Length: 274
Image (cartoon, rainbow, N blue to C red):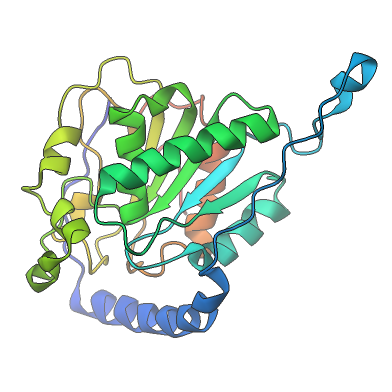
């Protein structure tokens, strides 16, 4: 179930302020970007154990939380999640991994298949049966495609998206020469696939969106409106697109969403970002 918020346009002062903050975030991110180019090395599989030792192979610290996998946006990498990872780590999340999909990727579906393989590997390494996914922009759309179209709901407890074009975005038509950008357009086959029925989907979705998100056109494109999905749309006032993964208020909302994964029934604004 899902109740929709009314579409609201950001006022000019809010838009100017959010754009200025986004530019500062971009400058900081350009500095960190080289640190996230290489693929993160996963935690190795534990050595096989027998007898009584088999009960002690997996670490017990942090087992209260499923692993969290982080998925970056278009032409980005895992460095965008430096602050979010620090926030989650300080609050008890021990199994945190970020997945880089290749900058040469031209098909969202292929990226979703890569994610599927990575999730299986994480489950094998940690002993958890399910994981949580957090995706910024295009990363959120990849996570949703995996869950909704590739059977990922069997492995994914919660998908959290930050400024993800669930309904497609009309920003920067000239960039549509890139296949991935075309797949994020409202009239793309991928967006059409995600509007198809998804009966009995077991994954809960939480979509953070802002009226000041300059990349979502219209701003409401970052909300989820699907009758078969258990989804919460969380409005974050005055936060630009690039600021969503580094904003402290959003990080607190993500922590609450992950903690309350089974306690909500699709109630709008049930996850406070105040």
